[in-house]
Length: 188
Image 1 (cartoon, rainbow, N blue to C red):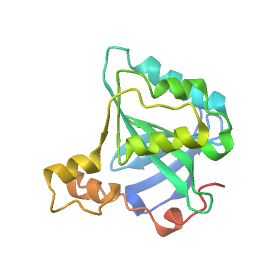
Image 2 (image 1 turned 60 degrees about the vertical axis):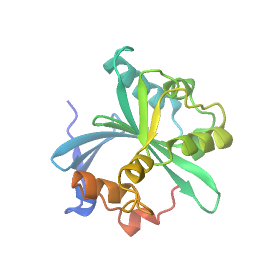
Image 3 (image 1 turned 135 degrees about the vertical axis):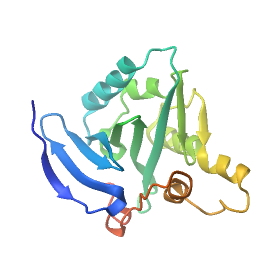
Image 4 (image 1 turned 90 degrees about the vertical axis):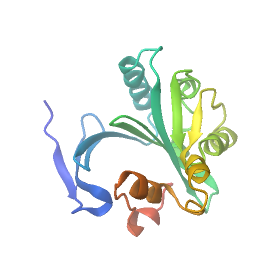
């Protein structure tokens, strides 16, 4: 058993209380709103992406609907998508697209699984950008833009709001991204 060593205590910033890292698995554990989220961070290691995809596919049979949260970060200087974030239940993957080279086939296939339902803000646009910038990705499965849905339900309320506003207002979760994070260099 690997003992996780805390690398940083956040004291409530973004709702996270403790972030721990295991060098053996390249996984972080984030305690957020009384839940543990296992996050795999990838730089240029396609094999780690392959393993995460395999783990998710093994957890959910092909006939079971799976909700996958999707988000990206873009680098304005390079005008490219530099990170891709995927979450299924409490298992998340952050892929540094800028350094991974060619997207792993497992990731391309992940996006076209018919039982995977992708949700986020600008899901179709983000997948289209990844396709244009890195090639070979299409969104063959069902997806929903949660901001669009919120705007349909409450048209006067959700004009220029983002994911953190939706989480706060609809779920009561505080996930504010500190300036240190939001202004950081995402392509490093």
